[in-house]
Length: 166
Image (tube, rainbow, N blue to C red; front, side, top):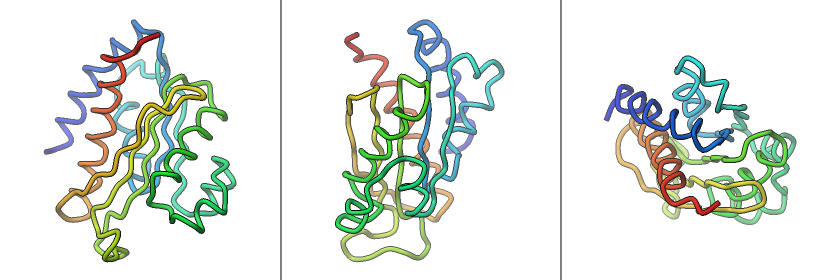
């Protein structure tokens, strides 16, 4: 997998987003804005991309996305409840009608037995409606884990566009 694959997938999604009157936003932690970069590398992406909020620290997740401190304390940043709160908080704070959130452990450090390096949670939502939140276990070094996370985030948007019911 490489950056070109990401670019090709984003280019495939762009016309569908425009046709379907969809606007994206991202809340990123371990990907550090890479999802947003992949989308905004496309000329004219302002037609369908609103914003990205990179919240690497837990405090930023609370301050900028409205993640509850109690959720972070109980489940940790790399968890389904946190990515759900991240994506729904993102949509409350943006003009987007599709949101993506991601939080994970890219490595090489930071992993535990329960959440090893490569553990990444990604969530997709529409305003007020969580679509799905999925746990991935990626292999590879930091760059490879992050690359796979970006790819899966884009694949989720593709699924959402194909399966939309409104």
